[in-house]
Image (tube, one colour):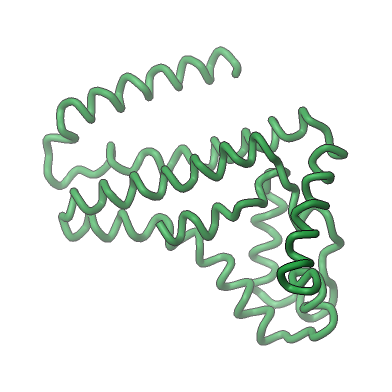
Length: 193
């Protein structure tokens, strides 16, 4: 951790403890302190790639080989690789890439909608559960990094890659994907939370 990271982590620890001890913001309409953990998640996610790179790509890819064997045993093939190549469908590419992208608004939408309805206790529970899901996944990512399909296989080409939802997803991945953060799926964990 850089000195500035330690400084911010210390500050956030103190503020979080004070918020918890004092029972949260005093203004019932103010949810700003409640949702700050979601704003930190992208920064914590970015650190995973840095930590994974310290192990080196061969170590990370060795973990990928193990997880791929599990998938092969469970599904009989590498579905995420084979399906789009052997049965390309612009329709399914659009739907599935949109489903993948929907994770981003879903994670933020739940707590914000609860806050808008002034259901602060439920919003706190949802925030806690989402952050817990992320942090469990992040610890696994750090201890057992798996690169995942975005880093291991060539991206599909042709019309299935050119649909707007696929372009959107690949732009997001190119702009901020962390190597080593593929298994377990924090997308699924946070969405369920």
